[in-house]
Image 1 (cartoon, rainbow, N blue to C red):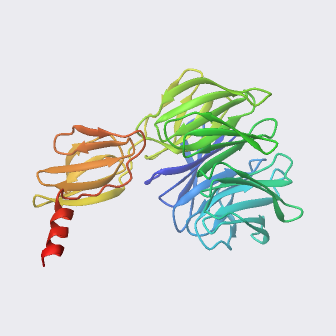
Image 2 (spheres, helix red, strand yellow; image 1 turned 90 degrees about the vertical axis):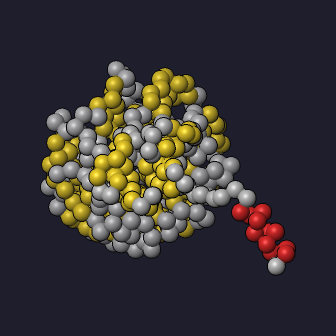
Length: 385
């Protein structure tokens, strides 16, 4: 068993690693052997997965508008959580393992019991909700959104308890440190430490932060960014953060997904068949036996031939290998004699020569062509018709 699409979520507990992917699969792995043990399925891509605190259950959140609870280690389906009207972005267990909270693009936060019954719904965000977690005492939920706020929800009273405005900047990822302070990573590459309702900002990356995870044993925070770096930070008792190290992220790794593995490693999502591991003590990446995904992201007709490119960065011409670009690519553009591709590394490639013609500090998700002078010619035609 392996993934055939990008791994968008990683969770860890004891001897297990769980991954969820864009191939609709959730897979349970033995962390010591890196071998798959069981598989579950959704009807659409999976955005997140998380273990219960006792490790007996796993929950996954999907763009099929549901979250699903699975038994560990068989991944036998226990319950389906429905009620959201859009993609479910995250699902997390309560500290007492008796409930699951979910958030979705419908801007709602919901709490379900383990049979799938919705107990409470919270409204208040004005943008899609991306990230969610429980407070350590289980009395509050904390959520972040593209609306640039982090909000806290009083579970017993069923109301919003507080709203922290992070300058209106999209915030994809949040964590709690050992003192219960909220840590947020935003689209400007900043880390915000929220203490008593007041955020303190630290410039951390050159592009948006997609994931922050906290290791309580070492009081260490890891941040992963679309600038293709992973940074390690120590958080003091007063909330001050100090950089401890920084590593470049391999092209096969997706910065969106990471989880603490043991107390000296990270399990990280990839654009391939398995998760990767980063050992921060030795500054070593383990990407062995990870095959690049075969998903196709773009197609172009160029000089009488059909070209395709996708997760592997391999360009095919009329179905045959043509060029290896070494990076997931999202688009192909035919421009005269040239064919261009760009993607996750922020690099724009001339496909035929393999040369990099432009580099950006964050991923290139799309491209468009225009012919210089066309707008002026059209305006002149309008004036003289």
